[in-house]
Length: 427
Image 1 (spheres, helix red, strand yellow):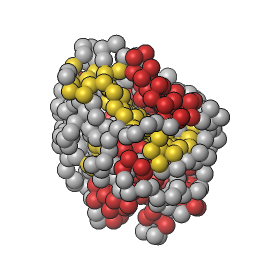
Image 2: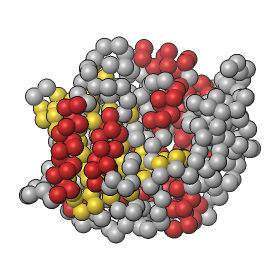
Image 3: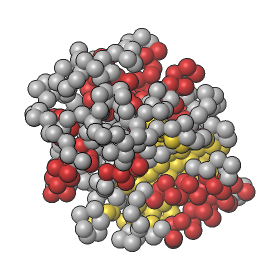
Image 4: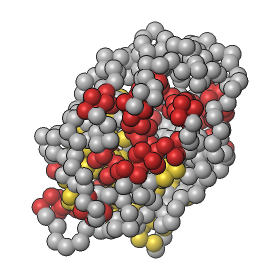
């Protein structure tokens, strides 16, 4: 399809300053990347009971993120078998897993190595990427409940540098219905990214890529995934509140959920202990642990976590624990169902059809009965998934060997766990 480039330079007014850092999806084809950006979210407004204070019992992060102690129950044995087989079949370097049912530990373990001769452990930290989008979506709904903003406010007062800002709303940015191109799938960006994996990208540099194109469609009339939306939404939320995004998330999301090992990093550093990553993205197998993630999202929203926090995040966000039942329904379906589908101006592999069984919510993805986020980039792959009907939380993180299949293999492991524990609710 031929499209006319938009002769727009980088934003004339840059996003509000905050030290730089980031998250996102690993560079692949447009369709693979969008599919990796879409997986599953949850469909029930019942808030889950608070977990036990012990990290082993409640899926909560902290110093107690250790392997399950004592004899495993029937479900724990099922998960152990699934994970052991998956590690071998998928040629994974490491796989970390935590499964919690109704806030109680079913199985927590880490198999394989972080580095040669260094065993993987459940308390090792990894890049959690797009999990932060689920947190920002919940944050946005909290602010709407407090009447600090309205979801359908247009953004020109906060983002005057954004083309069509008088037509784009906060809801559109959060739900990927703005019509902006995704810089992560832009050929010009993909040509630059592998040249220097340690480059520090600024929001202005990232936004210049989508701003150089015409919109896929008029804002609000279709659906297409774009990392630019969350770079912009973060800037808007910081200006609305007068508070940096990492501070907002710590005060409103990470703190209340007890995510003591989930944090933003303004540099490529990862808190110790570190789960090391490796990738063949540049054509040869190499370590990618400390590649600069500043290209993945806005400064202040570049997070690392560990497997216990990831399971707690799945539970807290997936159950709507921090928002009202009304906001929870919006989290799961903010108006995206029915949008998307290929048109004369937007191909079907970009404007994916949003259905009841498969759609993007407010920073989360709904696939039938599950709520999911699934980051995958620079050798790291992970997934958090929550099933309200069974109060079941699944968190998986995986790293790869030279022979690991393409794609987010943490998703594959999670799907197998779901099939073993909840066969009536396939992930």
